[in-house]
Image (tube, rainbow, N blue to C red):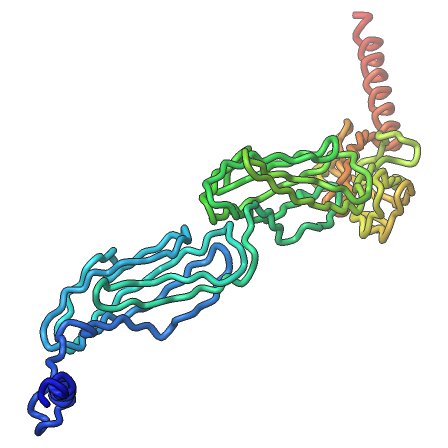
Length: 389
């Protein structure tokens, strides 16, 4: 009978012993090492754009009673992404974690610029103890290109304006790039490209980096009113980009000041007054507003006023008239004096220097003649009286 049922009874006995059937005092011993260390993060799956960094805070937890040495590894699953495992600001390969305690590490992943949209899986491993699977969802298609972004590409000003544009050149490639900078400005325009406050013709930018660029464009003196396009390019051996700037020139401001007969000389008596007819001509391509008349220099004791003192508006090519009222000092000696007059508007000005000759009065001229005649008569009298002796 044992031969018939002995094998089955032996198997039954083993099962009963393993299940603790007899008083629960007999059990299979637990492995102390297996499952004692756990890798934990609250963020299993994150989203990011190309070129961004993703950071996972990870706790290394020791559920055992004694200190455990935990070797840490990283499995990229065939994805060539840059990564760092750090603790306390330094890269870490192994930790010692006391029983019942935990240590913190950080995993930082760099999403490549040249990457396809989709999900990518990675794993942080503690070989023989635990594996923490992670996923990064790349939210958009990556690019291998450069970008030229301008804060304000369109600007308006008059012909004396220096148009200044602020731009950012971004290297959206996986390698460091050296960019040659150039502009194709209209003829006569002076364009300067600056980086870090200095005029440059090229800049170097690290992969994923950017550089602030300033572009200054100054139109020629005789520029006509209109809209001007200024293309600016940044090119390297493997990539290039371009932006187009726009400068709207509202007009040229220019004026001249002269007299109605174009003569810049006159005469005046000492203490007298002279009215000079002035002509202001708008030689620019934009209207002149509030043209102010003033004197830039007069002899001591002289006075100059204008009627009117301000001309409200002069259209391009048009003329306006005014009078300069000059009063000389009564103490002025005969001779030539200079009176400097000015007209100004929109930062532009024109001057006219008048040569004013002070003449003596006719009355005093006759007095001089009478004195001369009296002197001659006196000499004649003395000659007649004493000449005979």
